[in-house]
Length: 157
Length: 157
DNA sequence: AAACAGTAACTGACGCGTCAGTAACCTGGC
DNA sequence: GCCAGGTTACTGACGCGTCAGTTACTGTTT
Image (cartoon, rainbow over all chains, first blue to last red; front, side, top):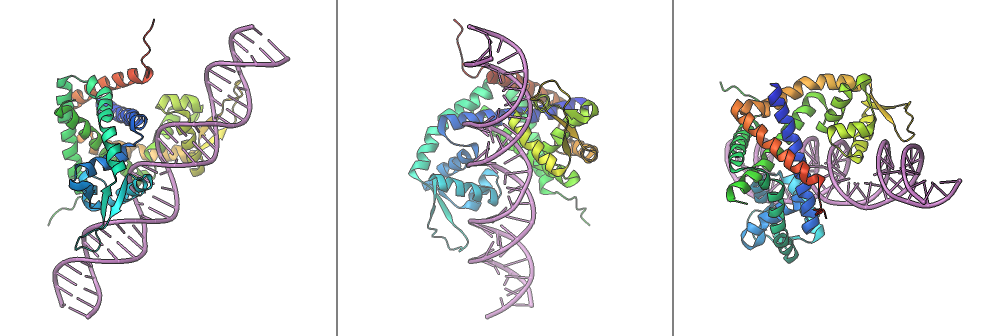
């Protein structure tokens, strides 16, 4: 790695840690929700009837099932989500549902959260910077997904 | 926020979460160190004699004193760091020191960690993409630091 | 000297995310 | 039918990071 690459890598870590912290803090102050809670509520709010299977929800937001299960337990404790009776044929499946309180909490959080993202992120960058950043991120995402999908190089015969 | 800004914001979160996870996993597999441990050891390794004051160390790596204190407790438990007798005039000050084991652990971790950062980050991007990314990150960092320094807008008289 | 604000170091509580499990269920081949 | 291998959901342990404290010391003000 060159000096410039290293500096940029370090800057990436510093910036994202800052943004995570500050936007997370705003979300908590504005709506008493964590980023993780907001993410799950957002997905359930999109879904028809506000219900979803854990596995499908986890896939949609890019989490593993363990992470989601822990978050669902915490959300259930807060009363924002509840388990619903599953009518599915698959006996393993369960069904989670937004409560009214959960739906309300998400609705009240959405606006302030977008405003916070604008304040810390979008307000800082020109259109051109956003375009360039988007390009780099897409490249990194493709590269990373590819590497993650083939963790151990297995030379085909 | 425009659609493009929002997408880029979401991508930034997704990419950085991916990189954090994968590089952290590499560091653990290669050297049995977490990112947080590596960060502290790196700073102590820079310092003359491998010692530092907690407050100075925290400032240098951009942490608050609580975060560092927790990390130092865990590092001390692992035997990578120890408290040293402080010869300072200020009775509040303490002094932390790298142990031999800590120094060795850092030395063994450095190479693989840089290689991991190259693999997940630097290998993906062209020189031009790195330049553009660096520009956006510097802008975000300036913007964020400025906002963080003046959290409540106080109009001067 | 006493009171004060400020700083250095630390702690407990708590939510988060990863890992290594476990239990229940489904689905294929035999 | 039955078993092997995969899937779904969940859990306990543990390190991390934030917040709201506490304690001990320092410099300043009166």
